[in-house]
Image (tube, rainbow, N blue to C red):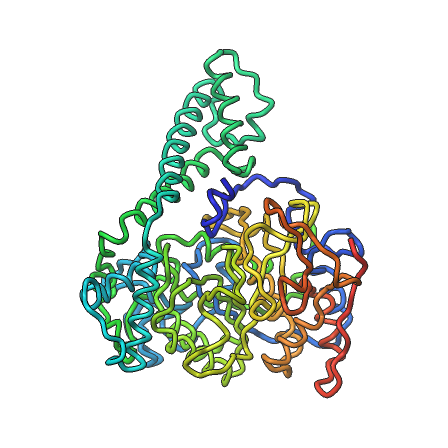
Length: 552
């Protein structure tokens, strides 16, 4: 199993550091540490020598929710000063009642929330099923819009099919989940620790033969499935069961229409974009792990050994909940972007994506609205190992509706380091030099997770993007006269690159190697120190050359 089969967007997380020295490896500097981090400490050392003082900057986190009780985040939340908390009155007349720290477009006025949502291809298939299934279709009689709709439905109908290989894989994972659960419960009887990891289990010497056999079988199964050896037993079971549940739903997606959760909870007229004022102010929601982790990376909360709070940009995090467990709704994304822009965000982090976007024009329009308001959007490339030059993933900088490419989006692939997984590349990140702009660390990334003081590790381009959002916020905070487009240019042109662009790096678990130019436009990894240096000397008429470093 590759990260609980490579279709999972997130890998198993764990709260025990795999190495204290590597806890924030993504901050490190290649010249100093021989690790391909973003040179964050070096960037702040450069800022300490500037006469500039940081100015306030709002970063919107469009995600699944942010834990408002986390000690390291609660004081960083954006506050809408025009709104009086909890008086149930829309004081600022923006249509959203008591939106003090953000808004939840996945909530109902009665306080309920959408937690899980169906895949977009399933929603599309059943939305148009009665129109097209089993019907004789003459597309020559269709308008251009009808042809597009019919093609969309046909594509969804093909992809919604659950193959025999997928069915066999599902049965395998069901059996594996049951086996791991049984083995773990047997081990706990003697180990007396239900939160054990495979690494902790390895040196354990059981007294009973049955426990010894369970231990050896558990370790073998974890290795075969590719589960991280530092994942706790409860987290292994949780994520395996979640994966199996999602695949069970996929297996039945063609015969079982998605539950009408939106009409039940949100009660908006979804197909009417003018019906915009829905939701509630529960910006945390029921499943805030992903968004809380992202928010911590946007803030780039420092470790206890590095006291630079006086240098940090004055970042405030605006939580806009638009991403359920499942595919997001285009309407919520479009309105979430507009909400963030209208409330002062200058950077928007969007760590999500999907393969179908039936209301793409709404999102495209919102992205271009953000461009007009000088807002930079940082978007994760996705974790399916797709070539985005060949496969569409949305939101996308290119719009078929506007027939142009938005210049205020920066698309981020995930990088790693040889000390982390043996390569600069990952086995999950989407890539493609026409769509993907630059790489950023996205493996074993440490950040905040729900709970008063909880932290943990996650993998994904979802983690790579907010690392870039922090650097963008840093530049916009210290150099407020730079526009969103100029900041994007600085970020891309200051990326670390190998001296020899033809240098190849192996792709873990894939029998291939790639140059960084085959991954992204820049062929490089984001670098905070280089970006600060370039921002100091930025000249729009004569841009500086991209800085390079030696090959590893």
